[in-house]
Length: 364
Image (cartoon, rainbow, N blue to C red; front, side, top):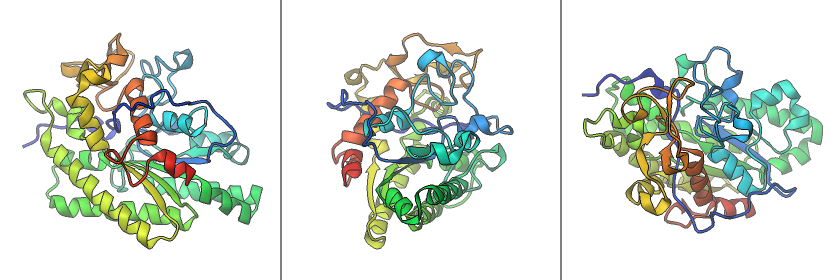
């Protein structure tokens, strides 16, 4: 039986994947050939969306978040600096992740959207019920926001040119962990197989909706062994991983792999990269020293046992050697780990990214 889960489980998500690559020094300078990039998902990719949601408490625009960001600024990223969405964008040729949709909406959407848009919202899941009471932006609404962007693009560029731009764009999606956290928090009695199937049905719906709006290139970031993040380890008296959640994570990966293969056969022109976040993360946890990591079981910023009993905030305990930590807070990776994750997604081999990596997806 689970002990009482903290409501914060919905608030943020464990980082996606952490594995180094020999290509870690690959260029990350912006250039004019970078593909337009649209990013969807949860707090693993959120670069400030929730900062524009006045009714949500799931925010990261407070210290010590952003302590290693330029000017030590808390930007709304659940990180000590940049996150994986930023590093993926850099590898594609951007300076960092595109700005949040809600920021661009205020700044003038038509003038600012041509390098891409980030729709990701901390606490979001595949299902609308996930995070429903947290006043965040669920995946279904993120897709609707993209539809608004597309309409604006058509006004500015014309229908034909807009469709051409969207076909060449990359659609990155990082979501799913919050749904599983919610399953356990609510002590659901739904059969696990049925539950995973419901997540796949929702994922299929979101991908097909984007496809019918013109998307063709999908960069899919799977979920890691979520039972190994600090917030879940504290429910194991030994401080070890909470293995039942990892079982769900493995089922999620295999089901999503099958779904993507099916959709790529059914949807003409669809191409995708699927990052095996589970294996990537376990590889780092099991070989921490090879990645220059000292701590893979605890947070750098937080309170209590494993610094996992509270979120990162101005009153939290803060580590000094952040590059030696896998986790920034009770769910999310450090900037260092996020960079390793992004480089592996972009340049990694078939043991971690299939059927092609993100670099090949961009070039296709």
